[in-house]
Image 1 (cartoon, rainbow, N blue to C red):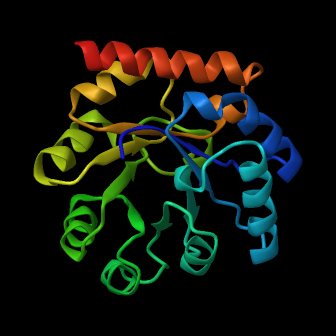
Image 2 (cartoon, rainbow, N blue to C red):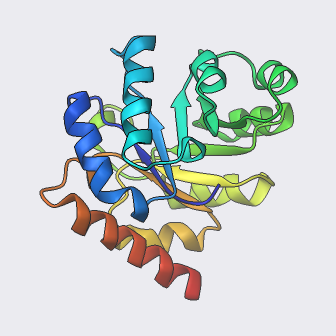
Length: 203
């Protein structure tokens, strides 16, 4: 579950999002649908458009909506603190890859113990979406990585030049939103992240 997790921004229309993803889906490893204002039918419509564009359902992860992940035969679901417990989803739908969003070591321990397949931890650096919360930083990321045996994906304010320092902590991947999807040139941005990951893997 490592590599680049591309997460929708909630700042684009569906058509804008689909257009951007069409350009760059080969450069990222997973595509997360996380749109608070979308209803079930919106998600299904977006998924169908992505599939029509040649993107595998097994590359798509949906936030919270276990029902849609199952009915649309997606790779998995990203659970939050308001979602169903991991062990419930895992027991009913063992084929789903289950990620959990965590913000401290205790949450990470709990979700890993419940059977999560991977964790998204952050925010690591300063980000406009979390202006009132201090970033976790690389030291805390490394502490989580060292204790948790499942893959940890870093999120929050990660720029291409930050990628190598993130991977040095042992993190298996990065989650990116605006850094790619809101870039002036989404293709160039996605390639920059991809190149930095490749360099990190060679180190």
